[in-house]
Every structure is written in C-alpha cells, then in structure tokens.
Length: 317
Image (cartoon, rainbow, N blue to C red; front, top):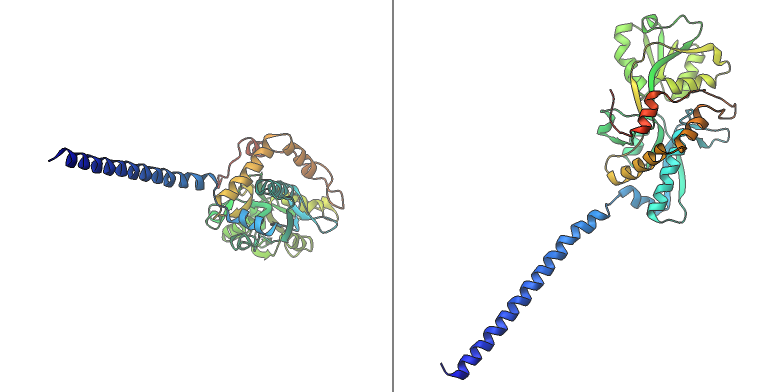
C-alpha cells in the first residue's frame, strides 16, 4: 500500500470514528432527556378536580341543611358551620395553587342518601359535612383526615322512660337513611324488637321524634345535640343509651384524585396545627350560632384533640 493510499485510509477511519462519537453523544443526550420527562411529570401530578376548577373558575361544595353545627343553612339560607369553614379554607388553597385571581364557590345541598353518589359522579368537588369514615364507604369515595370525633347514641323525650336499648322493644326508632345511624338501627332491630323508619335527612328524623311518630332517634351525639338545641323546648329531649360506635368525621372527595386529597389534607393539617382550630371550635361549638343563638356548649373531647394533634384518615370501626 502506497503512502497516499495509507493516508486516505486513515482519513476515512478518522471520519468514521468521529461519526460514531457524535452518534453516541446524541444517543446519550436523548436518553437523558427521556429520563428527565417522567421526573418532570412527577413534579407536577395531574388532578382532574383541580383541572376542572381551573377551567371553570368554580369549585362546587356540598353541604347539609340541618347538620348543625357542622353544616347547615343559616337564617338567610346560606351554608354555615364548622365543616363549611374548613371547606372554604380548602377552596382558598385551591385558588392559590392554581394562581387564580378569583374563585367562585357554588354550593349544593346534599342528604345522607345522595352525598356519596354526588361525589362519585363529580357533581361536587368536596362534601362539607360530618361524614363518617368507614371501610365500606372507602370503596366509593376518599376521606380527608378526620376533622372531628363523635359517638353514635340516641335522642329521646325526657319523659319517655327510655334510657337503654332494652327499653326500645315495641317502640319506633328513626334515623336518617344512608347515615351510620342507619347501619346500627338495621343491625340491632332483631335483637331489641323495635320498629324502624328512615327519614331523608336529620331534620326530618327529628320532626318524627318531635311529633311522637318515633320514640328514639339514633345518630351522632353532636348532631343530636344540635337538633335538640333547635327544638321549641330543648329540655324535653335527652341524649341517652350506650355508645354504639366512635365516628371519625371527615370531608369526602373523589377516590380518583389523590393530588386533590393531598391539598385538602394539607389544608386541614395546617389549620389543626395552629390556634385557628381552637377559634373554629369555640365559634361553632361553644358560642351562640344561628338565628336562635343556639349554644351547644361542647368543649373538644380528648379524642377530638388527638385527631387535631395527629391528623389521620384511618378508620376506627
């Protein structure tokens, strides 16, 4: 091979080597970019609820009309209560996260019967009420960390002579359809021999008790205290009987949107960690509320304080 042929061969080999190096660099760069894409996506998790709120400029919140002091319609027919205030804080957190100048809040009245379908079908973004966190309900909806803890007991007329479940034989027991009281009334019916009826909401349940069409009303004790306080003569009613269950009360939201749940939980946890929650408790449970100035005079129990100190969405049943 002549010197000129050797030189030509070396030149071609050099060009091939340079091309291979360039290809390797391009491949490495492309691999690095691909590797970065999942991280970027992970840094900004998708949230169907937040996307909907951003696109519409509106958040839809569910509430109860007669679940004082958690969620009720005030004298002007507007949503009010402890859980309502917590939801408004979550709405503000959503507005800030989305960078919206304004966020419209639309309220939707719900009952214990239709609250879960409303969340599942996306009719409401967050349900602002004393929803009890149960394993069965977790199959359909997600729950925030607990915002309160109550117990299920029964409300009766003070002169009824009813003080225990054994006193219910032959009597009529009412509760709100779709509530945890519903579960207990159905479960204990055979054992204690009473008749059961189911009202559409807590207000109707109390009316049946007040009118004498039922002799006992089974429900969360805090809700019973609120309904008793709104009666024409609260002294006519007493909360009695054993604790049928301890209820972890929470807000409900979509199971399909963990990012939205994270934001709601963070909002509640932040609220519970400061003095703000004490002010909310005092406002709704220890001061006059509503058009009639009802004061439940309920200080937070040890269980409630524990729920605030150690926020959790765990079920206790």
